[in-house]
Image (tube, rainbow, N blue to C red; front, top):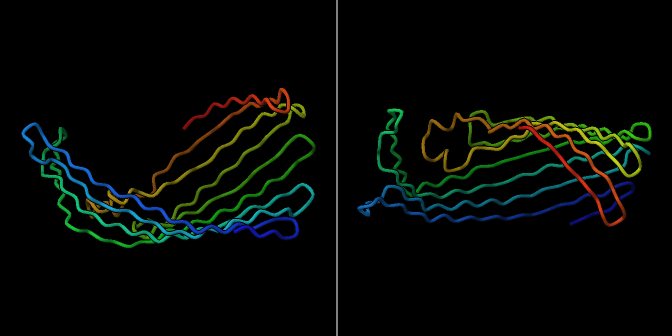
Length: 205
């Protein structure tokens, strides 16, 4: 659902995703060594707003809420790893309900005639782990060499919550943090004509 208002618009999205896993692995003697029958479902509601707050300023912000349901039946007979650890997972008909939330804010500012600055941040919440909140700042700057040529540099921090199956396999995994990646990008773009654009990027994670 999109709603237009003076100097901007708002978008509201209702989503539903569902994944079902049914896997079985056997050894050469057909003895089961791993089984996974699980279902993951997410229902989400998201709102995004983009608005012009000035001649050269644009503000974007939004939030999302999710309800998650996980049903699992896992089997991993005990074995000793090359590091000397013994792994064994036997989870029968495990069911759990959790919630996720996220929010972001981004400010785009056009400086002078050839510089555009973008600053923002995002926060993520997951109630199934002990350290449930993570904040990720991001930023980018674009310099226009000409009306047809731009150079862009950006940096950002990104988080992803642990997989649901990790949390089911071992109660100790509830102490896991959000998975984090730091990314840096440098890009060059040139518009040869109205229907032909060349763009190249290099990045480091």
